[in-house]
Image (cartoon, rainbow, N blue to C red; front, top):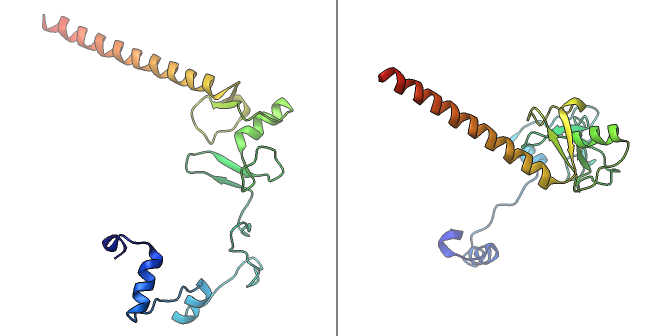
Length: 165
């Protein structure tokens, strides 16, 4: 209906109200459970009404680490100077900082040598002064692999030509 009218949501709600169509109320999970007869369960000593499920509250199941969709491991460390707004820092930066004995600058980049982003062993990490240098290294490695593939294809083609001749 919204795309059909090409109007704002508040305008559509106002139009529905004028013609007598009521909107369904937005219910919380607890109210929905009560309405449909489900029992609400709490574990680990959670008490209802403490606001544990609100934004910014840490779940009782949270162990301090989580994997991002990009494959990096984030650690909850709200006092870190380079922490995100939610208080998390990537684990590979923490490992490198521990080895160096100082905080990394925002411009320094960490490279995973084996390209597995969750492998944060110190022997798998390499520090670059800037992200630009890190990016150049990746492009150089890619060009090298493409060159090897082209040479392999040429050798295969050359061998087939020699066999046919």
